[in-house]
Length: 163
Image (cartoon, rainbow, N blue to C red; front, side):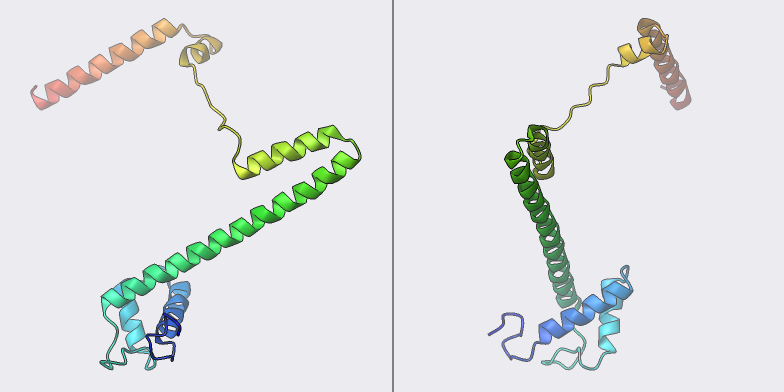
């Protein structure tokens, strides 16, 4: 038995979620209450126990399940793409080894490491003092101006607030 069929074999949950997915594709910013109202107008999307529209809790659960499914499919597509790229690199590296082209072998290894996130992240080190010197400024003077400006701003703020 399908766990999404509500135990009755007629796919109520699948039909409701398919309808919700279609509505979301057409109106991605629709609220849950509006979604409930749209579903209410579809004769085949009603609660079979009550004959009325589904409650917001059910709509919310469906939305969470739909979005989870979309994320899983997106991850699977990404995972498939990474697998394809790794397979291409494997074939290229194998040919490079056979032709003794070590430069290509190393490029394949480097690319695979980047693709799989195996490299240590590149660190960006910003040295403001060195940057100031390269711009022709004296770092000590820049610092003093910054402190003076901050002190002035603090005194103005204190005066305005009566503090």
